[in-house]
Image 1 (cartoon, helix red, strand yellow):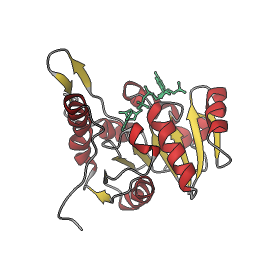
Image 2: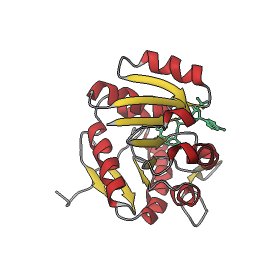
Image 3: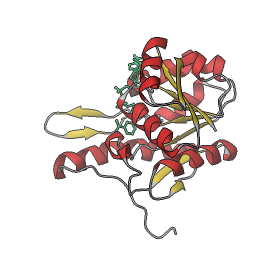
Image 4: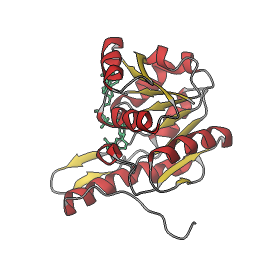
Amino acid sequence: MKVAILGGTGSFGRALSARLAIVGEDEIVIGSRDEERAATTAAELGARVTGAANEEAVRGVDLAVLAVNADAALDTARAVAGALGTTPLLSVASAISFEKGRGMLPDPDVLSLAERVQQIVDAPVTAGLHSVAASNLEDAPDEDALVCGDDETAKTIALELAGRVVGGYALDAGPLASARALEGLTAVIVNLNRRYKAHAGVRVTGVR
Ligand SMILES: NC(=O)c1ccc[n+]([C@@H]2O[C@H](COP(=O)([O-])OP(=O)(O)OC[C@H]3O[C@@H](n4cnc5c(N)ncnc54)[C@H](OP(=O)(O)O)[C@@H]3O)[C@@H](O)[C@H]2O)c1
């Protein structure tokens, strides 16, 4: 499939693009606020990867991945909404914050970022891959990827992509409201990494 990675110049978007390029089944368009930065990153990732400004990157793709810095997720959704139309959008963003003495904290907002993105765009929004660290994507990580969403077709596409980048399973975690838990899981994983000096991921037991 053809996939746009918005924020593909950042650590997660770049790592996801690099893994997908190695797998070799998708055509990838790196998105950035800066067309040249997108092109430079794309050139480093091989022939299957091109670059474009975010609004251009989403045109004509099968799936767009919202992989910008979490603080920029809503503004970026607003910026690309028109060009995106009804193309499925997978949000990987988690609005976690750090507090000295306590550690990483989940977003206190009642709605997940993905649900707030869904209020902005017409496109069906899914959320997933929050538990997969950029650093673990150098190889197919021995972990599962959780994806949620309300639109079954969009979720099938997002699960297909997620299944290509992890060594474990891409699992359907239910409706978009599950993004509240999945985004919060990022804070849990970062706390585990800090506590155990690890690169934690998630493996779900009992489903296969
Ligand atoms: N890092 C991980 O291991 C990991 C794992 C799972 C999920 N995630 C999620 O993936 C997303 C990206 O994480 P990251 O660590 O890659 O973040 P990052 O490197 O800080 O940012 C990613 C990209 O976001 C764009 N960006 C930054 N500020 C922006 C703004 N004000 N407006 C529009 N775009 C802006 C930048 O692209 P341009 O400057 O080129 O536009 C940047 O390269 C986050 O939402 C995070 O929650 C990260």
